[in-house]
Image (cartoon, rainbow, N blue to C red; front, side, top):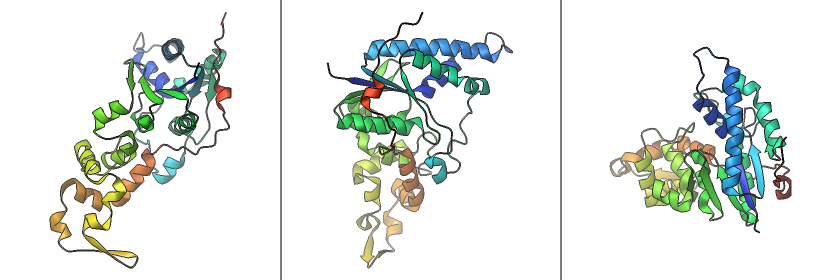
Length: 281
């Protein structure tokens, strides 16, 4: 039987489950909430394995910052709600429980789970291995260009593929980094004043973000290594296009931030991720 790889964004799963478990009392021991989250997370992983029937599984954790994204944008994730301290202190228990289930886990400081999953998915595509990414993080949608890859929302029991992307965004998965470079997503700023509709319109018109900056778009003419822009450009270029041209540096930075890495050296092979169910007594 052909292999199926299940990549689980561990903190995405854990934090959502933890947030959904209410404290029994206003001043209840926070450890009780973590206990509940641990039990519910293990049950969720078992359900995911039953539903996806993978031959290989990897639980991927975010490493401690800073990452290369923090170097490009010092305020990256600065507005994100921090993980509760008790939960952070007990993450090792989640890691140990996953390993007791026979699951490989991965975490490396300075590397986000997004890039680990992106790199492994690219290798899986090259090896023609079917891959399921379990996460609600929309940045993984860019990996759905291959028919071998789907993204699964564990909570809504919904799968996403390239058709889903075209339906939701009006563009193909390959163009999503450019789309987010313009419209922004999560902790990635995008171009101020341009939303989803404007980003989709520009990409359908020009094909890519870089094509927007070609001289024939701005009305410029190449002179040696420079580009001279004609005076009438101020009249012709309006709306979303004008804002993207004015904020080129911001747009290009945002594209880099939104693009998942595929050349991260992880020291993992498919055989390392082989899943064998264990019996816990």
